[in-house]
Every structure is written in structure tokens, then in C-alpha cells.
Length: 409
Image 1 (cartoon, rainbow, N blue to C red):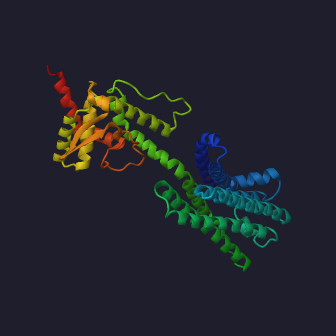
Image 2: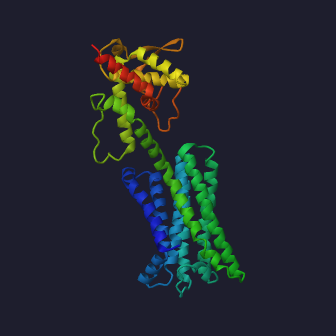
Image 3: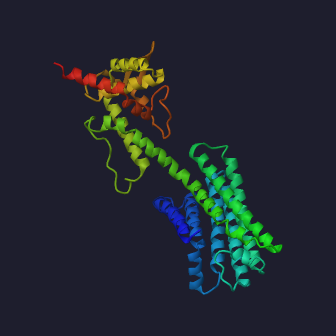
């Protein structure tokens, strides 16, 4: 790969890291957050230090031939350790056991990094090799041991993380499961990288020249590192994506209750520090919607709901979906005017579902819509299902009918 591809991959990773820095500052004592940011930082650093232009620059600035090699090896080893520690903290069990295991991995890999430095200092690498350092010096005393130690530590981390993530995928769902699947695939790529490197080294020791096999596996580690980093980022980004989607899907109901139609705005202004916090903005939007529903409790007209319910059934909707559409029509019509009624005092309104008389509390709409809420819910509707129903033609027709009736003398 060219140096540009290395740097591009590092830039993508560090851009994601930069987005996490404010959260890291707020939770700077959280070992999970620290491990997460360390993994992303070290992953990008591996790409930077592995780029041929960087190798030449480091060797030239220090005046030590091939000093970039142990530096890159140490970074990859640190990335492996950080990945193991992140998995330990992420999975979490007994806090004491988590700390003990994390420290064991940390000190073990620090020992490996120190040993790599010592072995490089004891060895002799007079000829600079930017792309094939490991196979060129595969038979050099001390350097040989350094390379084997680096690959062994990397393989241990790759295999261990792959097995742990694979076992864990059976116990989790949604974004965590997708994240673990990416980690399994990513670490399989990096495991293949280590295996191929070992094959090339073994062939060199047996007198065969398979150097090309070693230098051609760079894409494996690149793909693996990208997938692993994406796997660690996904649990952080995924729920925010869900929140952003829910935020957008709640817009019709929000505009109805808290926008121009509602005549008031119920959202507290957000500061510049929180304007990008999608979870906070979603909470503000849900709060505004709930405030609007509470305000309209006294104007809910059950006749509107039953009429829209029957029209939805006639249009082919399922009973559960038709009930949500009926409630959405009742809320939309109530948003046109605010006349006091007994419902404002009790917070409830009597409705009929089919032949069954029930009482629906306004609090039925108060439960969070929840990111990832599915199709129109059965039973009490969520804010999300109610917002979807607001956009149906039946609700529009109910609103237009009420407007026409209001205009008539």
C-alpha cells in the first residue's frame, strides 16, 4: 500500500477519536472509556508508523537504521494489549476480577514491549529495510527473537479476542452483537496476517525465499485493523444513530404539538456545548411532545378517534394499527383548539376498541418511544408509532374535516 492509504486510514480513525475527546474528558476516570480511546489512538498510530514514508523519516531523524521497526512493533503490541483490556472492561463481571485481569494483560504486554527494545539493541541491523524488515533479518540473532516475540504477542491477542467475542455474540443483541461480529471478522484478518508472517519466516529459516508472501499481506492487517476499530466504535455510534433516526421520525408529532400548530414552543434552548448531543436533543423533543399531550388532555374527542379507527379498518389496516391512527387523529384534531373539559381534570378519556369499553390514560403516551421501536405497536402506542400515524391520509382528512366544521357558521 502507498503511504497515502496508511495516512488516510489513520485520519479516519483519529477523526472518530476527536469526536470522543469531550466525552473522554467528562469520564476521564472511566477505564472503559480510557481503553476505548487508547485502542482507536493506537490503531491510527500503527498505520502512521507502518507507512513507508514514516519509516524513512524516523530512521533518518534518529540516524539509527531500522529503528522504526521496533517502534512500530511496540505500537502494534500496545494496540493488542489495549484491545484485550477493552474487551475485559467492556464485558465486565466482578470489578475486582476485571481490574486483576486488565492489569495482568497490561503488565504482560509492557514486558513484551520492553523485551523487544532490549532485543533490538542487542541485534545488528545495518541495512535499512522499509518493507521487508522481518524476512530480511529473520536469521539475525536477537532480531529474529524480537520478530517472533512481536508476532506471538499479536497472535495471542488476536486469537484470544476472537474467541471471547465469538462466545459473547450469543449473549447480546442489536448494536453490541453487530459490533462483536465485526470484531470477530477483523481479528480473523489480523490473525491471518500473523499466520502468514510466521509461514514466511519459517520458510526463510528452511532456506526458501518466500519474502513476497510476507510483504503482500499488508492489506490483511489494514483491513483487520479497520474492522476491529469499527467494531469498537459501533457500540458508541450505533445507539446515537438510532437516537438520530428517532429524533427525525418524531418530527411530525413534535411540529403538531410543540411547533407552529401547537402555538407554543416547549423545548428549552440548548447551549452550544450540547447542541450536537443527539441524545439530549431527543430527550428535549420527547419532553416537548409529552408536555403537549398533557396540555391537550382536555380536548381529546373520542368521536374523532372512533371515526378514524373505522376508516382505517375499512382501508385495510390491522386493528392495532387502526387504533393508533384513531388516537393520532384524536390528538391532531385536539391540537386545533383548546377547550376545557372534564378530561383535563382526570387526565383520562373513555374510548371504545371494537366492542370493548376501556379507559385510556394520557400517560399511555408518556412512555419513551425508545430507539429502535418497531412497527406500529400493539396495545398502548409509543410516541414513535403515534408520530408515524400523524402523517397518514386518514389523520389529514380528520383535521381538514374539523377545520371545515369550525369555519362553518
